[in-house]
Image (tube, rainbow, N blue to C red; front, side):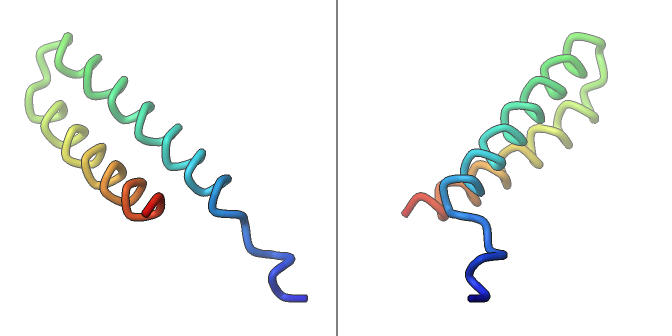
Amino acid sequence: MFGLFKSSPEKQAQKLQQAYEKKLTEAMNAQRNGDIRGYSTLSEEADKLLKELQALNQ
């Protein structure tokens, strides 16, 4: 009954994948604009999302 409110692992993986791609895009735009600190911060956040995604897929 309470499993009804939990999202499926596939949906979680899809959301993480979309967040990861969004962070990579934001990082690329920061790098193009010359914001190297912003680029490194966003890249680090993207790496964390990638690790979460990989852990979820295992």
